[in-house]
Every structure is written in C-alpha cells, then in structure tokens.
Image (cartoon, rainbow, N blue to C red; front, top):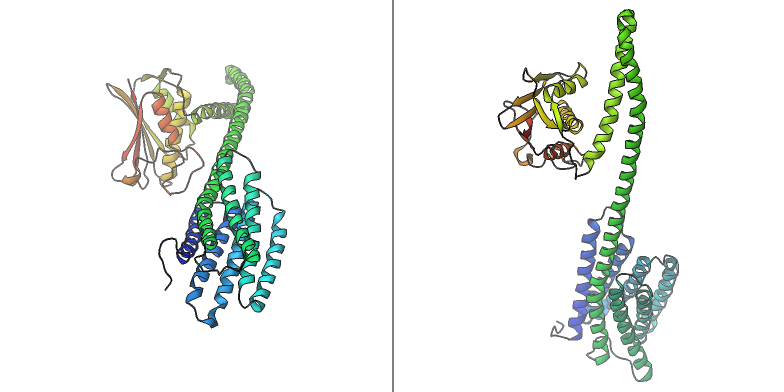
Length: 449
C-alpha cells in the first residue's frame, strides 16, 4: 500500500484526486438548484471529474501489475484533458467563446502526441516531461484570463491568477530540470515533484472555492438584474392599465350622466326602449366600476397602502357588492335593518369583498349558496363570507393570506387573499378564517370601532 504519511507524494496525489471529485460533486449539487443551464460551471464540473478520476488512476499505478500499466496512461490522459477543459471553463466564464474550437484542436493534437509517447517512450520520462509542459501552458492561459479581466471581484481573480502562475512555474521548473540535469521520476519524493503537487493542491483549494464563489456571485447579479427588469416591466404594465382606466372612466361617466338625464323622460318611453335604456345604464355602471377597480388594484399592489377613510353605510355597500353578481350566482345577504355607518375606504374594501366572494364561489359546489353577513357589535364591525367548499387544512390556515399562496401547492400569479389582509390592515383591522361546520370555511374581516 502507498505510504500515506503527511506531505508524502502519494498522499498529495490522493488528496488532489479526492478533492477534485468533491468539487465536481459540489458543482453538480449547485447546478441542480439552477433553473437554467450554467455552461461555464458545467464545463468546470466535467474538468474536475476528469481530473479527479485521472489523478486517482495515477495514484493506483505503482500498485498495479505491469500488464495494467495502461491505466496510468489513461489517468495521465484524463488529467491533461481535465486541465484543458478547466481552461475552457475559465474562457467560457469570461465570454471568450471563440477559444472553444481552438482549445479542442490543441487538446486533440496534444493527446495524439501523448498516445505516440505511450507506445515509444518505455521509460515514461519524456511523456511525463511533455505532460508537465502542456499543463504549464494551460495554467499560464488560466492565469492570463484571471489577471486580465477586472471587476468587483478583482482581488479574488488576482489571487486565483497568481496561484495558477505558481502551478505553471513549478511545472516548467520540472521541464527545465529534466533537460538540464536528469529526468525526475513521477512518484519520487524529489523536492520539485513535491513542489508541483503542493502547488496543485493549493490551486485545487483556492481556485476551486474561488471559481464557485465567482459563479455564485455572477448568478446572484443576474438574478437581481432579472428581478429588477421584472419589477420595471410590472410597473410599466400597472401604469398603462391605470392610465387606460383613467381615460376610459371619463367618457363612461359622461355616457352614464347622459343616460341618467334621459331617465327623467323614462315615463314617456315605450317598454322595450325602457328595458334597453336600463341595460345601458347597468352596463355603463359596470364599466365605471371596472375602471375604479383597476385604479384601486394598483394601490393594493403597493404594500404601503394607505386607506382614504370616509363614513360609509356598510349595509348599502354590501348590497351593491351583492348586486354586482348575476342572478346565477347564489349569494345570500344578511345585514342589519338599519344603516351601519363606519369609516372605510369603499374602493379598496369593495375589492377585498369581491376577492372573498370570488374565492368562495370558486371553492363551492355549483348550486351552493355563498353567505355574506354583516354584524354590528359594540366594539367592532364584522363582515363575513361563508362558502361550502372542502375547507382549509389546519396546517395551512396561517399561510393562505400570503402572497402567491395556493391550496393546490402551485404558485399563483395573482395576489389572491393577500389583498384581503392588506385591506384589513389598512383599515386598522384584521382578517381571519375558521371552519364553517359541517363543511366549508368562513372568512371574517374585523374592523374595530
């Protein structure tokens, strides 16, 4: 068995091989969390995989019989390939995509020479020196890419570039020593061999974590930019809808005013014209309500919503909300006989009620009745909406008012019931939900007096 004492050549080779495999696993784990492909990290992961397997195959070589010495050649080829692929990952990271084809051609040329040396160089001295020279060239290339490109992470890149230069210098030192004095056995404890593997190990640790940090930082920047662009587009869309709603509401209001004026002459109209006139008034009212809803929803999207409170008869407001729905929707209304005056923002409160009723209709059977109830207590006014659905699991009760939450587990595009919570909080109140025995749920908006 190889000697595994500290700083022994075999120990360093094993640590380098195992370390490369660990970094390959780390890169693979990170890639699994990414929705889109990260090409430079994928290339780097393959480089680490090739380096790890190739280095461990070389580590096993001294213990293998002579007939299995070809494993050492495969390991050496994988190491050379891994270093070249790591250079390609660096080039991809800095967007030097034109180097792909050139690097592949160079690697193919180097591997052909290495195969030839495997058959004709029985001592492996020339092959080992040749591999050191090839690896040194690629490490100089990696150092150049790191030191040439500037940015916010200049310090990290400079450290990685200097480490790559140290590795390259140690490799060329071996080449120079071989040609000047004598070949150095690959697995000896010669000071130059140990210097090379120490440099490799230092490069593995510093540049391994460094490259992962660089990729992570770039991904974070890309994510922030994407979110900023999404926010900008969302803001443009909101501004467009609000502008259209404002421009649409004015002519609709003029049309409604004209129709209201014509109502004075309604007694002189034939019955058929009266029906059409009333239909036009209702349609115009719906259009104006739609415009007001679009404008108010834009306010609700902003988490810093400030309600504009004014005294409102909640009995009348709830009757208007009920009348908004066609007769095909079974919505029962239970309100006090006398007016209930309370300071609210009628626009935003109406939207909250529509959200609760729409939610109740969606989760109730087709023929079921949704109950809308107004209770005027001593210290609060409570508006409740009861459905006949399947109910809400107890472990999800505290999550249903979160943005984009859905009971199905899918991410919703809209704001859902979070609008209701925002409205209640803007009025100094709160929203809650409880079971509607024997089935369904009851949502309550509590407005304190």
